Length: 438
Image (cartoon, rainbow, N blue to C red; front, side, top):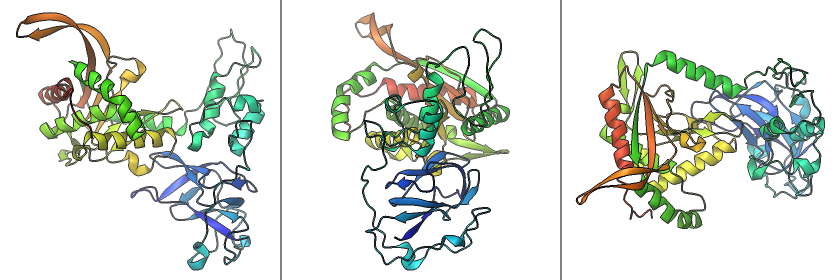
């Protein structure tokens, strides 16, 4: 049976290497088509690398913590027997056991083509619901005494709803302890301190920040050190917008296959306002101001781990509402399933965060450097409001929302920041109730 090298795929124009954070498979395990085989981390995102072939993992070429260059092989699999027999077996002795660095050249020519990909036969599943669980997840479940019935109840966020390491660790954090007063570790990671304490004592559990939280921490501290922050706030009436969305959302879901959220509408309004006030769409380089031609709008997405990541809708100023909605849905799905590419989170020129998702009304967000402004949209609430008409003023129930924007006072003064924020509000308040999306 032929041996195939799995190659670390390209992950963006500026990414040349990645750190192997964990193996999802062990040598000897069956690998299904497009099943995650390892997890990697770049300076932007963490993601799984799926297998392009189906077979058995027979050789890991790197250890956890190693750096892998883009285009380098990271593992060897043995494909199933009815794959083309024209491919000669790869000599595993070409790899040095001491450091797992390949000594032989990667497969080339006929050794790298002609492999047929096969559908999964479901042979590597457990549990009555036929869910797949990686060896890592199964090991954690075994150590924490989680049986198959309990494991099947965990909602997976991975490919095909697969339960990932983060899913099971998040579940363990909220799991009812099996015995009190002893506190148990969620796993045997060196990042978690071993603490046994009485539930009424003053002792605490100390855990190390995960990699993404460290990146976020450094990024936020650097932003506050770099930019003097100013925040402006407006309250707007989005009744027309809410009514329009309620009118079209069911048909949209049926026709497009995903929900129409408020996010693409907010992005559209920001992109329009940037055209009116291009000096918001800039970055600072020393004493120079760099004006960006495209409105690349970042949107903060909450991850199952509790962290946030900001994928970017590229060229939002050139998209219609349907195109923006498709981009938002695709990026959100990739973010929540750990499938973002490094390019997906690069090149942003302005960021939006929807704090209304958490029931908040106003926020003072920190600027996502090197941008100069970030907009927070609050929860939409029904409120009594004064409605002005030619016949006189009266009180009515309206859908109201606060928007707050932090901006870099080095280059954005109060007039520009306030005028831009008000313009975004105007576009949302004057949303056309009979607008067609197709």
